[in-house]
Length: 357
Image 1 (cartoon, rainbow, N blue to C red):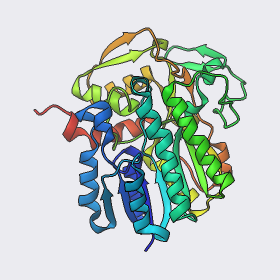
Image 2 (cartoon, helix red, strand yellow; image 1 turned 90 degrees about the vertical axis):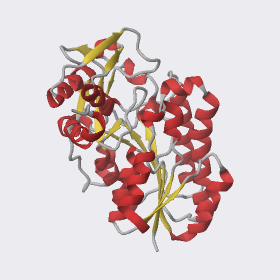
Image 3 (tube, one colour; image 1 turned 180 degrees about the horizontal axis):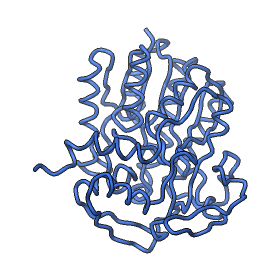
Image 4 (cartoon, one colour; image 1 turned 180 degrees about the vertical axis):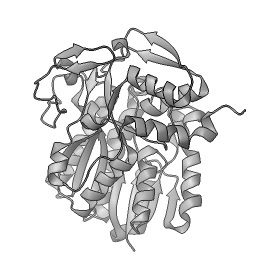
């Protein structure tokens, strides 16, 4: 029996990983206690996704309602499956800048402490299993905001000819910048994952994601940019456009493309690796551009409220370079762009977000 352990298994990337690795023939063990509902309220609950996974996958999926901060409960899961564990995919996290500032203790305990708990269990119970960690581009803090920018009609763009014009690479410093409390806790987790790879020889990778998105996102105002834009368009909610005239740019990568990268690493793992992972130049949009697309797809004019003051540490422009990962795994490629992503989000959530007629 080969087992894939997925933390945050009912979330966007976690649930995609559950389905993907089940299709590969692995038994999947999910760890998720629906903390998203506590962070963001009932509308952001992932319980619907956990129920759907169990219904769709049957005996191929075993769900454990365990908090990654609970060392004893987490250890009991790892002891149960032991050396049968072939890969660990760690997606569980507190994901919001705003929420982290409200409760730094909980944010750090989940993001840094919870990651340490997962790492130590891999070391003790399944040391040969690759560990894939969902990190974030927020580990770079606000360094991207020091890049030279040019204001265009619907977006900010990096100055032509700059060395990051094709996308930001992993050589950007994470030091001497403002991270936000969330960014700092994710830095701690990221560094620890690297250290367990280099110091203890675990086969680990930190994937520093840009905007991770897809139809499985339980979209809410504080987390889930593209999915929340589409939800607002479909439900006729007011969307708050916060800072930078709505021209801030994000690259967006579909959850399918994320987990296909995970599979590539699983099949040929390395130790202590770091990869930026995003939509790159293939798939990116400003807030204004995403709103225009959502209006076109939904047929609804959106209600938009402009807020002048940006969120602390928010990026003006982020486009990832996937070059390092593509060099190591040349068979991997992006398959989605922003229009495809938004169309799929619309179609997948029509039964939940379109008003009953």
